[in-house]
Length: 147
Image: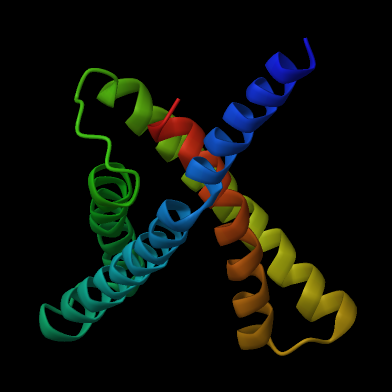
């Protein structure tokens, strides 16, 4: 009986190491790169539409956000979490969009609190909020693309 429990514990620990080990470290790196590429895409299109094509900055911002969203979804799904199946893509993109909108609301709230209530510089506040949201998002994206 004791050996069976030890074997079960050993198997459980192997599964845990597999999910939290080196593979996860590479996934975290891919997650950070995907987020960076998405942010760069958003900013690049915002600049291009506003400064080159002379589109009003708020419309440029919406268009750039949508393009960045598509890039982010594709990179997180297919590269970061290596989910190649299109079987659940409709529910995944719906959940991803809902989470993105929720994160936008949380981000805005956190920046407001840090700046107006604690006197933090707005750029520092955005960096702090962004890091908090990225941490939360990683675990929720795992649910969207792995489960």
